[in-house]
Length: 306
Ligand code: FO1
Image (cartoon, rainbow, N blue to C red; front, side, top):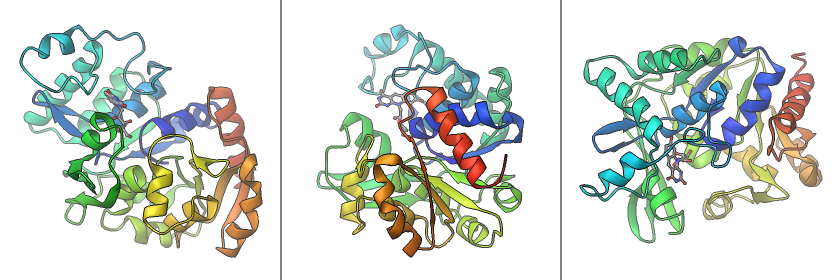
């Protein structure tokens, strides 16, 4: 699976109920990573790890369930970064990661270590060990991803998206091999520009996906022709794409074979077929793991993987 943060995690909760977790490799976006208080924070990696470990905050989808924010409050005396809610127990993950990276361990190694400590059985890979950063040209100037998404609540109009460093970054060990050999590659219902785009921008990733003989399927992040949350609708329009299943499929051309769409979008089937993409119709509102498991079962059955 190619994954961003919360949207991907909500689908994963179902996929791991349907498929054997140890058969799963999740390649996670790291272009959202940010340094807060000198700590290396990897929001999407942590969201996926905490979700797979069953310890994620069920209300937000990010952070740890039941976490407190005393340290963040105390840091407010010294810093102006309280807009990014790092919980007390979450901070332990960032302290560990920062210390290991500073001593020369790769992000891949540290991610494996963190996953092991949380009892995660799936293989979680950062997309790259090299720094890539998503920055947005907006009506209010250039903003790093977390500042745009969290501090500015995705309000400024986006004019362009850049993945700084992506052209020089190498996919992390195991990434291209997994994309080459997996029985299926599933693109999570994440934002194609902000979450999946940075992974696809790494050298060799698009080519590897295009060369596959076995299927690449995506789960649409739209329901009823609208983004479930966030700025996706506005971004599709801005980049000249329809806010529809066809718009999502076009983000993943030419390597997409199938798109899971919500029942409310089943009128998009013909447009998908015209793009050479098969439509798999399911319920794609993943409020509960059981709902996500039903969609995951449908997807795996459609790909003849069950
Ligand atoms: N998202 C928010 O909307 N507000 C936050 O304060 C926030 C804090 C946060 C802390 C740790 C973490 O791992 C993720 C966090 N996120 C927060 C989520 C994150 O900003 C985004 O959802 C992803 O980066 C986009 O995929």
